[in-house]
Length: 123
Image (tube, rainbow, N blue to C red):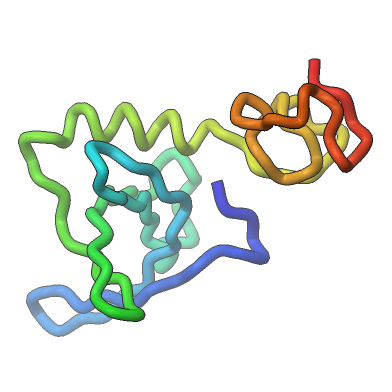
């Protein structure tokens, strides 16, 4: 999940011309395609569990990203992957129990042999 310093907000317009802002919570990949999990930030009065969440396909268009609706036939698997992506932690908080080292890379993909340049040992 993206932390507050790196979060992106994008503006959408609905069919009636109303604009609203979505917060990009995280990205994930499926079948060589990138997807984003977005949340409507205009409903600040709702609890986090009640906020509307969207899964959209990310299409690169030159230097820009375009967010398009995900295929309905893939939605069951995309929801599962989005939930997994939302549970991942990318924080640098040394008190966090997320099982990631503080050198900002996934320890499962780390080739440091368990001894990172950040001087923290992987378990």
